Length: 84
Ligand code: FES
Image (cartoon, rainbow, N blue to C red):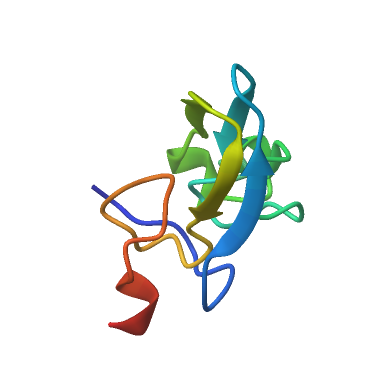
């Protein structure tokens, strides 16, 4: 699977709410990291158009660590790949 552009050097901690859906930016072009802002659909963004956001529905309310480097193998969460 093609990975997105690096958008950070470590995970982003987010307090997710049970039952709420979150759309993780897979392309790395979003200005609202770690979530999608629609930039992947921009016609001037050739890299981004290969990607679609990853939908995640929170099963409980708690702090989760979302991947910002876009190199994770456990999307949308950090798996430590930013250190590799
Ligand atoms: S802006 Fe990156 S997936 Fe939508």
